Image (cartoon, rainbow, N blue to C red; front, side, top):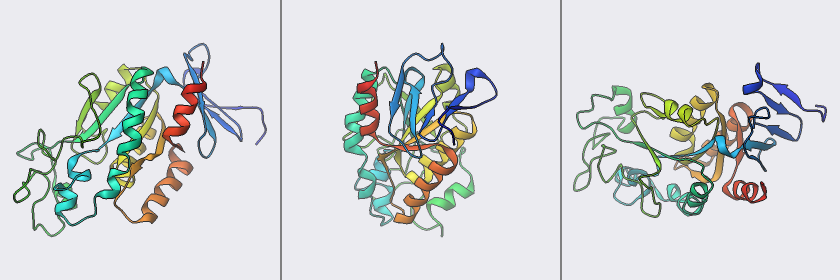
Length: 259
């Protein structure tokens, strides 16, 4: 590919400039407010910080804490705790930069009228034991709105001034106001964090890509309890098909260096 940037996009308002080293997602001047360059794969990325948001998916007790759904099901939940420390550092930085922080979390109705059999089956394949929306024996309801299991895990600090979106599908764009909220904010670039990287994070990222958002997954701010090959496949497909892989250190460095 030549060094001269090649335009990608039918209109100037939604056009990237791409060469072998860089994908400039910041759109055409004079629309760019604050261009930030960060290390990423498969290319470094330039984005407009004033048109970006951080989306944190499912950092909830049921996935990340003792006594939650995964723990009850006998799954080692501890890998899902890995994003807590980097996110605890990144979230205040994003707020300070004026970049919206979106907490996108499961929260089903108590009567399960927003849930279909396929979702119930995904949470208990043989129908035995407590499943989605039901109560863990001696514990809390599983991912039910307002329950302990659906609450953000200790170690993170969601504020009322952040944006909170409740979902009842693996993808956060289905049956939620997420798309409308992001468009009202004027956002076109999304940084994704949370768990599980190969499930709810990836499906939400995919839908964001299909809807025309520019998407980057923060490698140190995502995790999964799935086998290692699932994470490898996630990274591969994000870089090949949907967007870019980067991390919170590269993002912070880019923000530091931007005027």
